[in-house]
Image (cartoon, rainbow, N blue to C red; front, side):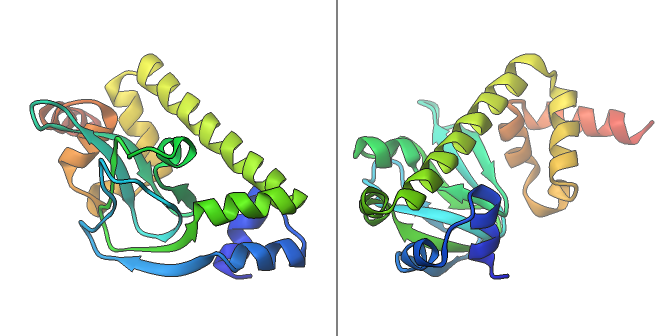
Length: 191
């Protein structure tokens, strides 16, 4: 089974016809570590399916500090969804924390396909539901788990995270300082 078929079957299986339509609007795209694929202030038109690597979305506050909103790991969708839906510039930057392989698709061609193919419309709904549930989960974790619990949870989701990305990126994602992360790691690993 190909990567795209694996992704689609996780979301909502499609007929051969619907799958062919979807495949017609995506292409393979590789990015190197630190490459930006959506810039803050740009008007995006693409969505991304992460096949390999780790990417992030982040904002920068008035003091120039980065705040990671989302870490993307395989197999997930990525892209400035709010900006795509509203047809306005992205408020976040999306870049690669490691070398990444994506399937890149034209969002507006996909929307046109959903208007003529019911299966793709249902597929789109399932993707939007998954994105919504991930946002709710993230908000819940930030408001109900302490920093140590968030770190342990992240380690369960991405066991090798400490070796894959910079510690300050992990701290930003956890909404803590690098010093706090260092203390948490020291406490956990000295037990």
